[in-house]
Picture (spheres, one colour):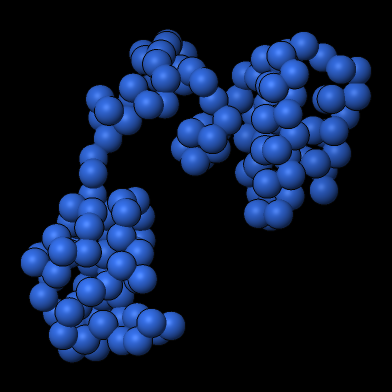
Amino acid sequence: MKVRLNFVRALLNKPRVLFLDEVTNGVDPKNARIIKDMIAEFRAKGGTVFLTTHLMNDVEELCDRIAFCVNSRLVEISTPRDLKLQYGKREVKVEYRKNGAICKRRVSPGWDRVQRCIPEITANRGDRDHPHWRIVHGGDLHPRDRG
């Protein structure tokens, strides 16, 4: 509640620049979405936002440029897209059960690649609503993509 209140107070005087620190940290997803929409609207009207956060999803959604500070020094300034191209990996983390134990693997995106790397998934993948595997992060694989 306090985070939302402070955020709205920051907008009251119609500033041209906002400095926001961890604006969605500790906020439930519904209110975080509202705050992010308000930030996007502020930017669309010509406002500038300086956002400090460790939540890279917020950065990707809200920022045109990113600056990384290490020991009080700027070490990298670029766009989200350029940073992903330079440092990103095309992989997904997959969790699945094998003999009752939870196994974790990193594989390239795409169901065919997952099948080749983790054949146990194809032999025991559950049904559409209760798969025995799930994607933990990244990539383009979704349970409905199963063959």
